Length: 436
Image 1 (cartoon, one colour):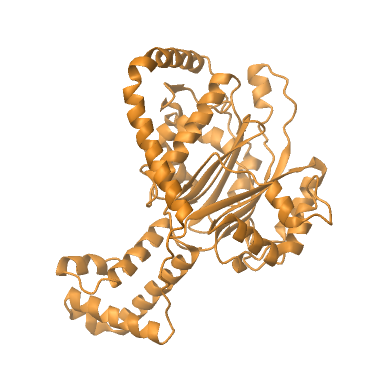
Image 2: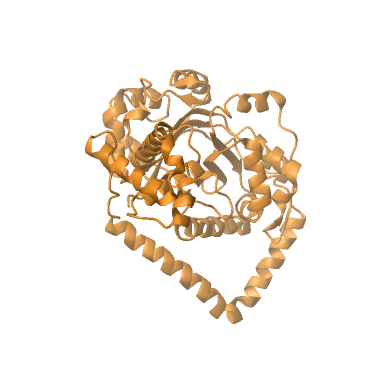
């Protein structure tokens, strides 16, 4: 199994250079926000292990909220260019591949960033500007770009064979399965289909995965065992948190129509969408500690409990990351999800509101929570407004498997798994055939 990795190159921008940079990035698109896979600057399609990528200007339009609500005098935060994505394999190999295929274009893009010179060592500069996520999530750990493409080709070939073979409809389900197996074997022999055997999981990843599970067990057991000692501090923590929650400043005005229209122009151009948001975190050491702990728990759960097709009860998120910025005073969140923003929000509200509250209730202006996990996102309209106000227009977005949802990718894997079995029972074969 080849694990998923992430990258995020983060560099500061001068405000005077934002507009010309956006003009350059627009040349990478085939339609607003959607990358041309073979664009001249960064030909994403040549990066064979790349699942998703985006370039987004982190220019927070809500940066003044914290000063207004809390009476602070913080200076205006930096504006960044973020180039981020999800890929198969090791970080070092991917960066080498990225430089090999896109060095001239990347130099043009990064020339707008502070501290980048024309003679800079591109590879070294990107590595020096790498920003690791505090937490990350992958829908299905180990499903590679190659696998998604090969399995979709397999499904299409099988569907075509069934359409050309109407007589199979009258055959028993196990006989249909056997016929399809023979067809695929012949297609592989003729070189028309290829189903690559998954690679063995790297030893380092397997050891880290085992360590993650050990950590999860130790935390759960240790929490129970040490409760007699920690109960008093926990009660004080809960009291202090509840006191802060009752006095939290809520600020959820309706987003400006022109800003909402700008975001809408970049959405729903495929069955999968991108989502980028940024915002300031509430001041104070307790909030800082909660954010750090919440993201650590989220990351641990995502790497142990939620590795096979779902994040809690949500099946539509391909990948997501949480990134702390500016000495943990701001949080950036990016995800790739299926469906519309409306359905995405509904999933948040109805299925994982507790998780949203855990991570995002520490953001300035967020609807009030109770005991950190309750209410908050359940206050539907204010929640939707604040999310939209903090959303960022993603300048360039690339998806290696357009038209395929996370459910489609899982279906295709199940089709392949069924073919790998020499025989299926009547019930198993019937269930397998319904996947088509």
